[in-house]
Length: 443
Ligand SMILES: Cc1cc2nc3c(=O)[nH]c(=O)nc-3n(C[C@H](O)[C@H](O)[C@H](O)COP(=O)(O)OP(=O)(O)OC[C@H]3O[C@@H](n4cnc5c(N)ncnc54)[C@H](O)[C@@H]3O)c2cc1C
Picture 1 (cartoon, rainbow, N blue to C red):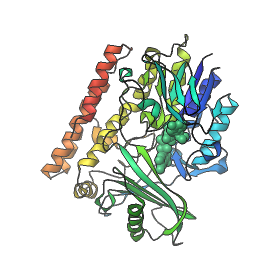
Picture 2: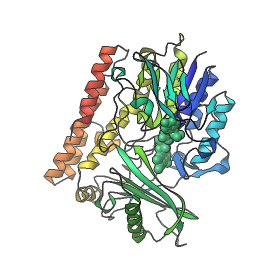
Picture 3: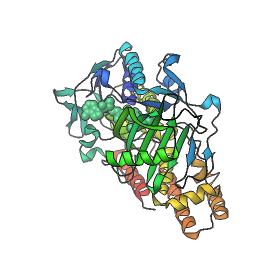
């Protein structure tokens, strides 16, 4: 039995803690918030099958409902792209606080210890090995530290450079989000209950207005930070298009950040593994990360179980990285190229692609599981992608931009296919360098 610390009570961290405690390890989660203040005051959407991955039962039926299909609009609001996800594949919507209560309850039953209201300040290292964490109440030591401290984790950011975990989120790689629930201003039947707008008002980012029975859920996401005045001004713009969106704040009203980028290039080092938003496990275009962090927890727990000597070295943990990239990370790295394409298109170009059927409703049927947007980029092959675009896009400047996206994605896929099978410091460092170079190459 080993001592395992989980830094931060992220979804993936708690899920991994639960699976590892079941394996017989002594697992403690250190979380800065109080237990009754975990999560945000809003709902989340995710695939319910993810609970089976982490050996937890589905929450009580009355705690969740099936999510509506989404309708996407371009900046000009001309053409509606309506998702048509089959009933059985629809995700569920659940209060974030209820998700936390459920997974914390299950983890405790499996023997996980929680230390709430304790901020983690950074890693404790011995040479290049992580041997514990610094908290505001003193140092804690462990055989393995799992970092689930979110996008700005002080553990990840405090690792010595020689660990090879590349710091910094990077430009246009995170959404600054304002999310709030307002009253419903009108009882009129709404045709598209869940509207998502790309580049609303020509500003880089996405926004949604989801009309629920008793309230309206507004999300404004941008690649640059913005303040409450700007959020209120943008909310007025959405009100002009959505009569259901009232002006009385009912819940939420917070600013938060979501990573929308390729996964961390190196998830592990000696004594350390990153999970969840800390490792950028969200779907790059839409920011969903709960189900993916549950799946990653399963992969990490399986990797730990195979490490019979409990060495928890970069070498023995490397299989976690291999598993994650094979199942999800490779697709997300390509989707990161699609997301980057959005940052180089003008609003008029994006409208052109939507209005002329280059981007279709089927392409927008993305969820945390089915990354359908990949189809735009990959088709059946890079040649199909080129053929589709050359036939459909008459504007030469736009066509050149899109072909560059395809070329970059093909380069990233080629590097990903060369991820070392076994771990050697030299080979992995070389591969990480190549991956970082391919993915950060400007379009
Ligand atoms: C507005 C918004 C809407 C979203 N909607 C969805 C959705 O509908 N579906 C979906 O799948 N995903 C959604 N996501 C993404 C999802 O929240 C994350 O991908 C998922 O929670 C995994 O992230 P995490 O748990 O690793 O990180 P986080 O949620 O950031 O959790 C990190 C945890 O670590 C704690 N922590 C941080 N720093 C410290 C510290 N120094 N010391 C101690 N504790 C610390 C935090 O308090 C927190 O509990 C949304 C995110 C946002 C912001």
